[in-house]
Length: 102
Image (cartoon, rainbow, N blue to C red; front, side):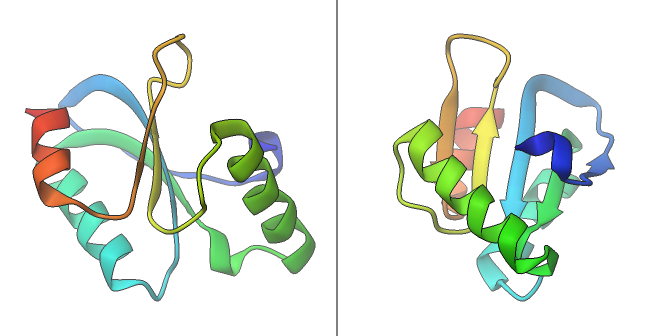
């Protein structure tokens, strides 16, 4: 599914995690999540789901729900996707971000 998406890459000094964020361009929680990642110099990539064509957005949300067995809400963050120890954080929970990235 991701091969159809054009992610924006944000380079940071902290690349301990492989971070991918699915966000909405109009979402305040998403804006705070992306701001947190930038301010803490975390390497990540993101895509604004609401700016995708309807059919792609629909398939993406179905794929996220089925692949990660999670309700889809935004921001939807996937960490370390290339390992068997994948982790998903749904929503912007600053305490959880701090525990994860510090």
